[in-house]
Amino acid sequence: MNRMVSSPASLSKAPDLETLYQMLAPLSVGAGWAKPTPSLWPAPHKTFLPAHWSYEQGKAALDAAGRLIDTKLAERRNLILANPLEGNTYATARTLIAAYQMILPGEKARSHRHTPNALRLIVDAEPGTYTVVDGEKLPMLPGDVLLTPNWRWHGHGNDGAAAAYWIDFLDAPLIQLLEPMFLEQHPDTYEPIKGSVSNSPMWFPWTETQKRLAATSKTPAAAYATSIALGDPAMETIGLAMMELAPAISTQTLRTTVNNVYAVVEGAGESEIDEQKIEWNRGDVFVAPSWRPHSHRSERGAVLLRVSDEPVMSKLNLLRAQVKSEAGADWEWVAAKSK
Ligand code: GTQ
Ligand code: FE2
Image (cartoon, rainbow, N blue to C red; front, side):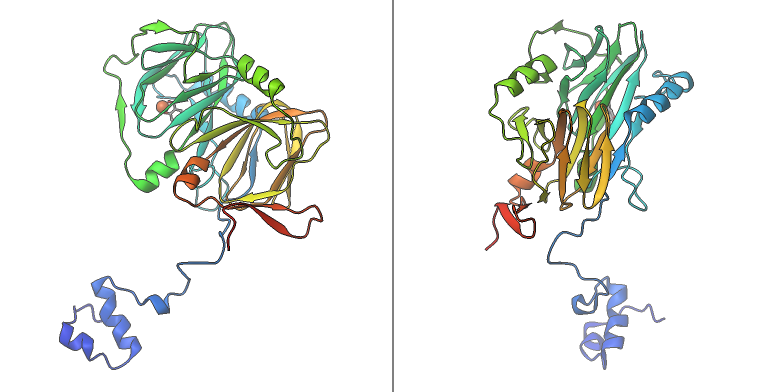
């Protein structure tokens, strides 16, 4: 192969397309019309797969990790829930990652800060488990959601009697894509605690969530069932909603450009995600990636936390969503109807 760089004069005289392509290659130029796969397409590719992770398994693996790896060695004792998409080892959906994390009684996880936004949903923890966000000590109890937005110092600790388990969610795959990744260790290793607070914009206690859900008007058959938002939105890139599923009522089938990662706060049920049936229990995580039609159902009622990149899609005018019509054949636009 001739790797010589062609002059403009010889480029302009390329006798045929094959020769032109050969002249263009060393210039890092490609012929748009000759690409084997298109660069634009009519509807989302549905690259990421529907998937499910069981808390029972995650908890068992974390218990092993508790014996095998120390928080002095591991910055975090966490298990990454990587989408089974071939070649993927990190992201749960395109923009989001979920992980199970555990901290033993008496342990501390050192403080750091990073540009990715993060939050946790507590699954099992006893009083005495806490996170420190910018010097404020916040309790971590089952059903609580705690935020650690972009560049806030955060570390965790457990002064309780039992191991504490929670689910982390971060927008790290999005930050990796966009490139502005920064991570810094706290100069004191464990950030000093300035004080405790009884409420904070970084903390959504489960007791409050339950009160708010009880006071909300019910829309059990809506795509997101009966939903309340945590935050407005919770963070720049991540939206949070607590979803109450009423007993034996299926939600309307939805397909949206939004990536939705669900965690089971309470109860059990099943979801159908692009024809895949997923049965879930308390503490489980499952994902409905962009444009995968999905609906949920619980025979006895359940609460899900929906973690999404909706704020990103909204801000960038990329939010598109459809629901299946009553008859079940047609799709009806519910967001950014295309004309
Ligand atoms: O707890 O600060 O699962 O920084 C991944 C990265 C948890 C955390 C994760 C993190 C954290
Ligand atoms: Fe972190």
